[in-house]
Image (cartoon, rainbow over all chains, first blue to last red; front, side):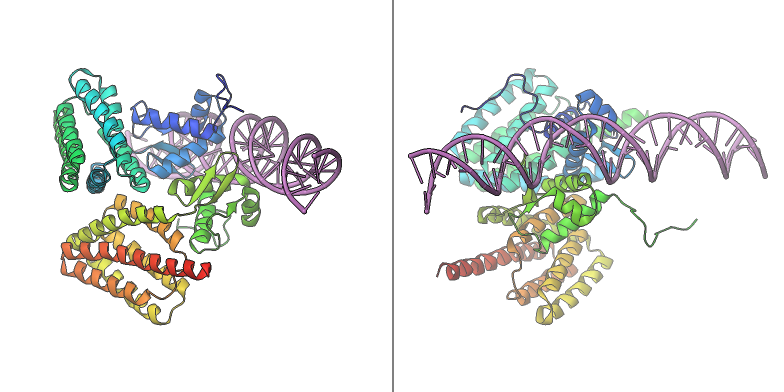
Length: 227
Length: 227
DNA sequence: CCTTTGTGTATCGTATACAGATTTTGAGGG
DNA sequence: CCCTCAAAATCTGTATACGATACACAAAGG
């Protein structure tokens, strides 16, 4: 009785899960913008399912903080205010620090190898990649790093926070890509060296740096818009 | 046109929300034990609604980590392993520390006053209260303290983590109540003094102490069971 | 011209119905 | 007595249907 992944199977996992992943992807890719309404009928028609799986997916995304649901008014993509970004960053910085410290202590060779791979690709993409690819590699690096701490609770919390911050950062352009990946390299080096304190410091600082860069470019954009 | 909170209104907020709160309460009170299956038909009959709101509530609780959903097998109360408790504690300790530091810096007089109230009640309950009341006051103290940091993201994350740990701790008895509330008093004193570093240290230690006490009593119980 | 009231439409919230998967039950054979 | 296997019962996943609510826009009144 071998595993049966049917090429054109109707469903190997629940519709709600599939729909949820799809919507999440569209939100994180910026195809669905913050504030945009998520009408159940439209989504169910687009995705070719009934409203029920859509509703369940939206509930889950709501619990994750990616969408906001108001009674009798439906769901919309969460609008992340600057104040909330500050809160997210405050928490994320601390947790990324803890995570990096643990990763340095646990020191899993296989994951370290994978991180090296991602880092290589990231450095290349920082010079010549699309912003989309850059975002994907960034997420991948942080995901792998989260695995390295061998703390599933921590990983889950961090993923949620990261998704929400990236919601606000949107397409942050390639301007900071070089610095990003230079900092990633530093963190990985500290992890490989088993230097937990340094890894924690660099990871925390990395979050703050990225946020500061965003705040600056955001302020500049606003100034421009005010002209 | 005054506000109209109808005495016997059918629903001022969605059934799913009400149902979710009800189930969450039963889980946290221990009326629903870890591992217990949550059959939709049974719950909907008990609560007098159809299966749809129940399903949505279960999805939300699943996203919070209180229940586990397996495809085509339904929901059950999450079973928290000792390993996961360790992970939860590791993260919680750090976040409670951050929270206490921020609370000490922000230093909101009104919330501090409320914390004093809760502390008073808690001290009384530590001597003479029921375990149920003790649990309620403990949750209240931590909730208020979480508010004091004025970081909603942090509060939400911490509440989720706390609920999951309390799932494992179950009714931890009154044995540590005195120490618990002594430590609470210490944290509050540091917050009032505006000593962020001390508050953070005490809060972090508080989480570790509670976990250690639980581990000890748990080990003892297991030994007894093995006799 | 602005404010207010009424009606229509879009959309959500819940219930019910049915198909598919899983677990349980019971009979037959070793 | 235990194991195997098939059929029934149980339960979940999804679709459809209908009542309820909120919002938009137009018409009437000040």
